[in-house]
Image 1 (cartoon, rainbow, N blue to C red):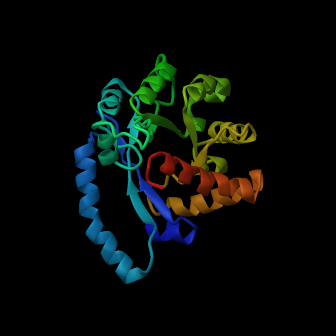
Image 2: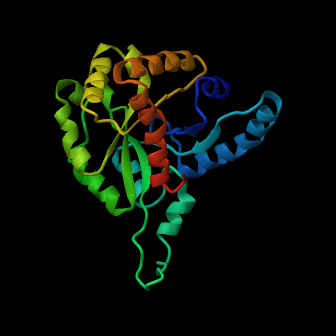
Length: 241
C-alpha cells in the first residue's frame, strides 16, 4: 500500500491506528510498540523496492470519555508523538529576554460517532486547547448532523478545530450524503486539509480517482493546498515540520 501511495504522489504518510475502547482497544504504548516493530520491515522493503513515503505515527482518537481523559493527561498520540508532548509538560524554558515563551500546540486527530456529536463537544475542544492540543476533526462529511445542516460545525471551528476531508468521499465511497456534504464544505472553504484515509491496498485506486475529482471541483492549486500545504501545516503545528 505504501508503494502504491507513493506512486500516486504521497511523500509522507501518517499511520493513525484507531484508539476506540470496546472496538479497537489500542493504547499509546501498544501502538508505539507495533510501530517500532514495523521499522525493520519498512527499511528492508525500501532497500529492495526503492523509495517509500516517510511514515509518521499518530492515532485517530474516538471522542468518548475514556479517550478524552487520555488526551488531556498526555496519554494519547498527537501528530508528532508523545515525546514532544512530554517536553511541553516539563519545566518552562526562558527566552533571551527572560520571558517564558508560550508552548507550541500539538495537533491531534479525533473522530465522533456518525449519528450525533458529543454533548458540549465545543467545550471539550476548548479543554483540549488548554491542554496544548489542536483538534483535527476526521471526515466531518460522514457525520449525520452535518448532512442536515453543516452550521453545526461552527462551534467546533470557533473552538479552534481543523476539518480534515477524506478525499474518497468525493467519489461516493461512503454514499451520496457524505459526498454531497463534502462537496458543500469544499464550496465553503471549510477544510484545512485532505487525506487518503487508506486502510488497505485496494483503497489506493479509489484515492487516485478521488484526487482527480478533487482537482476537477476546486482546481489544481486548491487541491495542492488541501493535499500538501494543509497537511504540512498541521504537522508543522505539531512540531514535526
